[in-house]
Image 1 (spheres, rainbow, N blue to C red):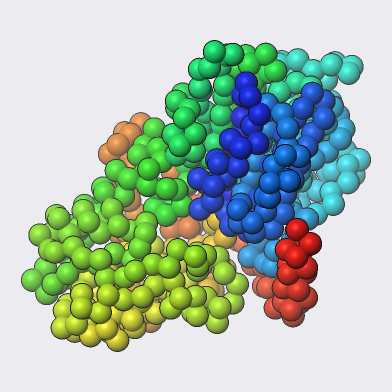
Image 2: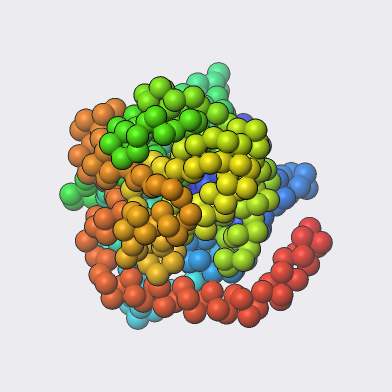
Length: 508
């Protein structure tokens, strides 16, 4: 999961892109970057850390131009951060191309081999985004008529990318001297939306991972980019679009609605907030079938993304809703953090109890999902320490039993608490008196109730069904072995990596 932006404006875009990244900061907290184009010249600045830490006034002044792209990075390999993998990525041939990517390719190894053996292109990092950039560059070069590009050639190149690349990808691209290109994988797994802003000088276009970026920057949402579709905005501010995949099909990642996206976003025509309300309604019905409602005194959410579900659940069951945890907003997402020790420590730093809401009460805690179970276990312990008589736990999502290979850093199967355990066993693991999971059909219905024509979703982390059809048990074994190896290497090199980070921050 990352955040991407692409804009063609009538005025300098550096501040616009910075503000957009701040809005999308929840999608990636490890690195950020902005690239702009001024004539045929690219300007770029990127680095590790939060958006506010990466960019200084001098960096912003060095990003002139009325067209640009931006990226906030969230690593999907589960390893120590590699500074060379901050985006956007640049390649100088053909034409000069800068790319930002949200998602994860599932055939990266095959593509790297093709790059080396057939395309004669060098890949300098382990990032699949650099691979994707070079695939696009090769397809543009193969489709180009001499030294000139036109819209038909660009769309033909995107068709070549769809033919070769597997997995999830939402992409924004600057092509030097031509304009802004954006496209989405044939299943639409990762989100991408386009909006416009009318000015006296002409129409401006903004593409972003979530509609909330368009709202806050004053753009009107036009529509979502369709699965397999490419959109090209030229330097004359003319928008062109084309379906570039032979058999596109909507299968958006349902975890966007559960946890990843901001509640004020609308993804593929569906309000994230309303979806979470529906999740609460369906979960309330499941709770009522599992736990006597009279045994629950209060419903308490685990902030922040579970609040809508918890509020709707409480209302449906007629149980008081209370805020029992206060969140420290300066701690990162815990399931992203490497190492159980760091993750356990961060939970206590991240949340603190409002003790009077727990003392002598039987509470139902509602969270958006349970991944490793580390956070859930700590939260249950905190509730008991605050004086709760009983602690019930409800998850607005089904059990997470499988890795996500489409751009979310889910742990290995062995680290997922739900793998190989029943609900009762998981309840004992996290120390809850009872545990209620959302049913997968109910989760799908929460989205489909708001858009009935969405018949398919990527629910791979819940049911192990990978919509791209190319994810095998051998593939999962390979990425888990790679992850475990990188994790070990990161642990051994942690001191050096930390010192490098401090040196870079000092140099900035």
